[in-house]
Structure formats: structure tokens, C-alpha cells
Length: 217
Image 1: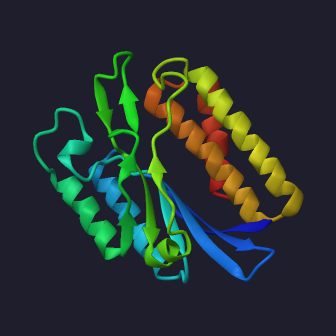
Image 2 (image 1 turned 45 degrees about the vertical axis):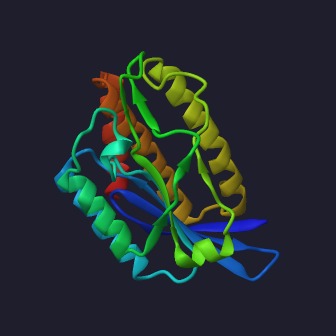
């Protein structure tokens, strides 16, 4: 059994602390959803640096970094860009390990023919994490459906799964402010997904404004 709590919420990151109830062990996991803008993406690296400064013990960083490390991680890419170099330097500065990806070369696909592909999703580990979980591997899994189109179905499916997890947390952490912030951030992330994929309807705009008002409370 594990007990989890949100300990740090950033603009682009969410860090949780997990404690094993059956043994003396805890670890931290930071979820990342980086913007596509290069300038704004630097805020992510700053947030991760700040998080590293307050943590001790095993730490994992996972999520969508919205940039590759090497040209081979993006189809038809011929050169290593400054953004790629910046990501590699950040990983080294944070002293994180970037394990090889098994089972495929890419994690993101666009178009019915998958003509645009790249590896923008990553899981990074600290030295302490690698020592505790030395058999961890990163593998791609077969997609059951395209991530292009059918957005309503995919979003509803993801939110349904997230809702189930939040219910489990709410039973253990009822009334916990950290959980409320986590829930709000999850809703904001879902709305960000809609914004990136298509124009918002009037209903979406009203919901977004409501979330923004809650976030500023």
C-alpha cells in the first residue's frame, strides 16, 4: 500500500511524494506537460531545477517534454537543434538518467498515415531511483487507436480513467487541499489538450473561464 500527496505544483509540473506504508521507503515523481513554445519551455527546466533542490531520495520525471534530444528521434530530422541541446544539458544538470526506449523509436504520431512522428515523451530517473529500481525499462506499447481524430472519445476515455484514480485518492485524503489542487490541475491539462487540437466551443470557453477563476482563488 502507498500513500501519496502533492508537495509542489508548478505551471507546467506537478510533484508528488509517495510513501510505502509497509516499509520505510518513499520516493518522488514529477509529472511534466511542457508547452510547444521554446521560450515557455525554459520555464519547465527552471521548475524542475527548483524541485530538485527541495527533494531527497529517489526521483522520477515523466511526461511530455514537447522536444526531442537527437535528430534520430524525429522523422526526417537532419540536424540537432538548440532546443535538443538545451534538453540534453538540462537532463545532465539535473543528474537524471534517460534510459533507452525499447519496442520502437517514437512516442508521438500525427496523421492517419503517421507521416509525422517523434519521441517527445520521456521518463527520467535520478541515481537513487536507479539504485532502488534497477530493472526498470522503458517500452512503447501498441496504440489501440489513432490519437488524431475521435478526440471526444479519447478525451472522455482518459478523463474517465483519471476520475477513477481521483476517487481512490479522495477516499484516503478527503478534504485534502493538495488533492483539490491536483484535481484542478488535471482539469486544466484536459482543457489544454482540447485547445491544442481544435477551436473551443462556447461551452468550452465557459468551462475554461471557470477553471481559471478556481485556479486564481
